[in-house]
Image 1: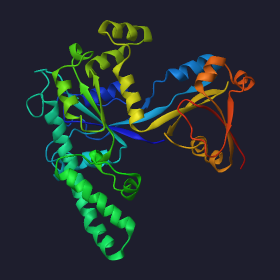
Image 2 (image 1 turned 180 degrees about the vertical axis):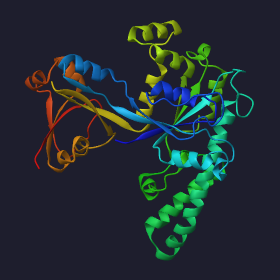
Image 3 (image 1 turned 90 degrees about the horizontal axis):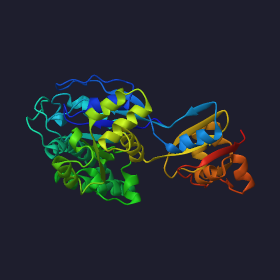
Image 4 (image 1 turned 90 degrees about the vertical axis):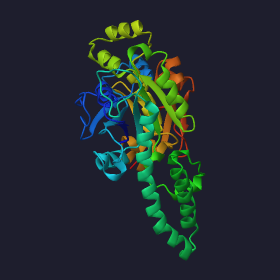
Length: 366
């Protein structure tokens, strides 16, 4: 669906190392600031055991998993909102993404320099938050100058609502709070849908830790968890160096043995990818036939015609109905034919809200 998560953070926190683990599109990784200048984009396969199970049952000729795009963006420094360092480039790149993966250094290592000379993930978080908030405040104040006049002279209720929300954002940003902390109702959200504030994007904080802390975390991780309590955000603990070692192993068996030795059930990047997928408000439906089993990505809450249009625009234009089998029923009975026989195939119309894991077959006529 063309949606992207941007990996951000201060220089030398492990962004590019993590990106390399996630994608075959290798970013340069080195022990100095601004190693990443142009954003690297990787198309990442979303791990999904349901797809594996469907492949096992259907035995198709071809398999297509769901994917999500991850963008590795240049490291940011103080003053970025005023153009310091690579600030303008950073802010432009992050504006184009749909969600933020914020990598924080949560490990001690004297051999890896920190841009501010010491390890403090909360300070690092606040540096980036402040720069994004300052840029958002600039955006809000600019819009207020334009919309306030329109709201006062035209008597437009929509314009008045826009100004109301802009003032709510202005107050929060001036207090050092991100726009995502402002609670809005549906009408208020609609009024500022085109504003695209940087601090309104959903965020996942990734604590990059050493090997000893990858299972239980450490004092730095606890600092981060405490600092983000007031935000609508998730915290994930990952050891980027460990993930790099796992990525270099050739077989699934070797990777599993390595993980077991560390006390882990799966690679951290798998959790990160799934969390990023969820962060973008994405879900998966499947098409399953002997020619192909495929995972299709859709936004949570989409109705059947819209999801049909993801396959082809003609499917949406000429939508007649959707034949739907719940994933659990398909697995329990073993095939589409047996689901039909058991009355487990539902016929749904244009108002059907597609559910995560649905196995779909669309009928259309153009």
